[in-house]
Image (tube, rainbow, N blue to C red):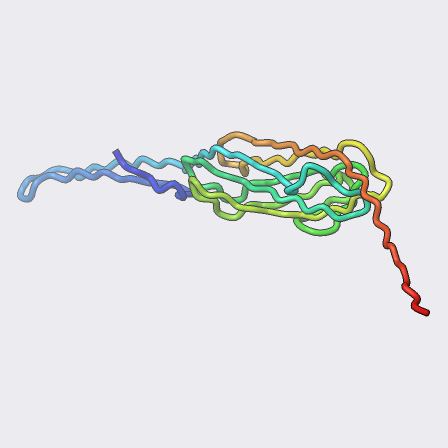
Amino acid sequence: VVFTDPSLTGVLSNTATVSPPEGTTGNTASSTDTSTAAPEVTLDIQKTDKSLTYVPGTNTTYTITVSNSGPSTLVGGIVTDKIPDGTTWISGGSYDNITRTVTFTTGTILKGDSEEFSFVVFTDPSLTGVLSNTATVSPPQGTTGNTASRSEEHTSELQSQFRISYAVFCL
């Protein structure tokens, strides 16, 4: 039984050789077993903007947390999030204007660890109702495991923003 490091990639080779004892004639024989690493991960994703409501006409920052419960190390997982209708992407990740999707690629996430990503959208000032979108993480090609998704829903909170000014005159 051999323990393989969870971050192992590429090819694992092991060769066994048998030789006749010294002073004996005969041939030497060997055999090699070669296996390609097949990383396996169990992924989870969480998403929040730390609020149950949104304010139309303001920016909203979403934070996505990708977790890996193993058994292998995740390298290069793909995180996608299609931004909701009525919002405009401002910053964070790589954004595709046609699909309205923000994309991130994970670094190295060891078993039991996580990585955070964030992006900012502007909500249209006239937007009302529920704001909903879903973040998804998928393992990279060559890694087996699950694809995890998480949705986040918010309702609008209409807040008036006005200033009251007054002056006091003394006679």
